[in-house]
Image 1 (cartoon, helix red, strand yellow):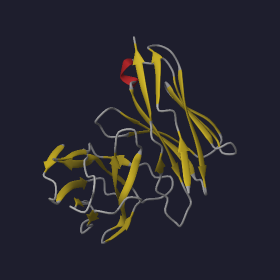
Image 2 (cartoon, each protein chain N blue to C red):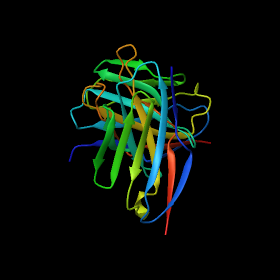
Image 3 (cartoon, chains in turn red, brown):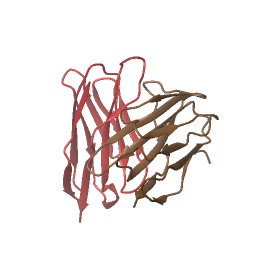
Length: 112
Length: 114
């Protein structure tokens, strides 16, 4: 089975830095995805981590520690448009199916 | 432009009626998925298909049915057996269904059963 845990909601100020954590317990692990979803819209891909360490893409970075079952998404220089839900999803290795399992998402509110 | 389309954006139905949600993709992807999203919940997998004419149940398949007669189309029928059908439904596709595949999502259909 799989268990994925994220904070339900976070708030931050425009221009600041915020870190959204995701912890997971899975029977098998291939990699971890982060998606962004604005209210009422489709999730869009942000990052995929397979190896331990930090990967940076502009204002967004994602970190993975396989041994600790832990990942975070780091958002720098926050903008109002970053207000969205951030979904963590784990890609498993069970039974030949690689379909990611999603966490409940973290709703980020950015205020002026 | 390649992408995934879902129609309609909003759908209202009376209790006890079956309803079919459309999902079409022109990305030439092999794998397609249906998810349900409820407030405070993550995406929960209903059905998925990795190849034409084949599909598998996800975690919450009861009360739903699908077909995959064409590579580009994966319609979902919400039957009257689904006890709580009001939700936001998302369709997705990925190139092969492999473990590194990024999923591409459609805009979603919000179904309200009255």
